[in-house]
Amino acid sequence: MPGTNEAWGWHPRTLVVDNYDSYTYNLVALLTDAARAHYSSFGGSGEASIEETERRAQEHIIVIRNDEYSWETVRDSILPHVDNVVISPGPGTPARREDVGVGRDIIAHTQRDGHPVLGVCLGHQMIAHEYGAKVDQSVVPVHGQTSSIDVLDDSCLFHGIPSGFCAVRYHSLTVTHMSSSLRVLARAAGTVEHAGRMVASTDIMGIRHNTLPLWGVQFHPESVCSEHGARLLANFAQLTRMAVGRLHVLRIPPHVQSMSVQARDQHVWKRTPTEPRFSLVARRVELHGVVDAGARVFAHVHSSDWAPVWLDGSDNSGMSVLASSAHAATVRYSVHSQQVRVVRATGPGTEDTLYVQTLSEPFWTWMQRTVDATRCVDSVGPAFRCGWIGHFAYEMKDDGSGDRESESAVDAQLTFVDRCVVVEPDCAWVLALVRRAADVEHEWLDQACGFASTAEAEAWVHGQTQRVREALDVD
Image 1 (cartoon, rainbow, N blue to C red):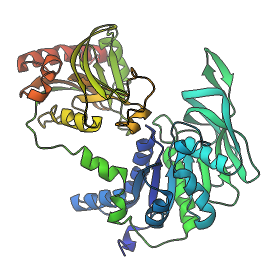
Image 2 (image 1 turned 30 degrees about the horizontal axis):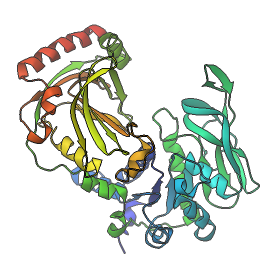
Image 3 (image 1 turned 120 degrees about the horizontal axis):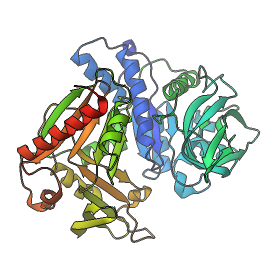
Image 4 (image 1 turned 135 degrees about the horizontal axis):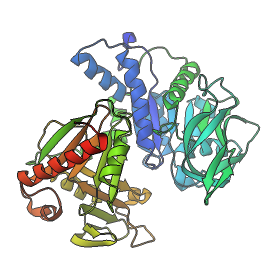
């Protein structure tokens, strides 16, 4: 039997069902952090122990999409090797089978085998719908706003979490009427903004089943702006321990791990050995305890920028990326037309087209080659050393089918950042890329990506460093 070393202690093995939501991997990251923290407390110190801790943490989570395996496959091949299930947020409604997939079967199966389930957002609504509650349009749709959450029952999922904590909400549906088999654990309090005015909101934010190990939260505990997310997942782990009653240590077997989206993604996005296209010019500025450095730099450097970019890290590292997409290369892709278009903005509302192609292969394959073609020589610097940033629409899950109503819709958009400022808790980095190698397949890169010479990049870095120092009032 794989992995029975009691010295490492027990931690739940988790199946995450991805409802095609951008928040799913925030949940996965939070779960992985919890497993990593658990095993690091047993592993001692040293490089070998760190590697063992990371390996064990990864072996405790499997991610599947809600429609990639049949219920019979999940029931027979995956569920026997996990201790609990987390069902992610996602688009759609819990009443529509196409939106929820195998997650509905897992929730219903809890009556027979007792796998604890935590539903988040759509997953929360799925539990409510399955057990007789009514899910309907919320009086006020809430998208990307924070609310105060009143804890009404702190005996289980919300144990040790103070009432009135802050959480991010992103939903237009809500549980409007409860059934007798469910209990409310938490509600929203206060007001949210809607159509330019503040409106009271008391939507149900947490539920549990009276007798089965089922819990749901409408808010996003995995969001960087939500409080006590790690504690909530730790409580779910403890509830799992109580429900499962298993004290021996097990890991997810390799043949089951290979079914995970993560295993396949690691293969798809594995970089092939190619000559790095760029070198990096970097300069570090010490912050000396400056507060709100990112906001100060952004206001000073990008106040007149017509295409500013500000990204904050999702890993609580305190890293922020400040850049501009003005004159940068941007890749756009449409599922309907399967056409990729590369443009360069030339001004507010104007742009030049650098490249157009209707793909005969998945966008992901084409984009992998493009990422490979924009590698940078390894060098010192922050975790983000320029590169691609952007977003993918939900419709990208159907890439290759052409099943999209709007031909003009943009389902993927990524911009190549070739110069930026990266702010960390103790320092700021000013970065710029220099072109050093050509690529016939990606000639358009030379028109919009990177500086032509080291001298040009160093001149830009020098000037931007001066502006950063002015913004922060440091030497």
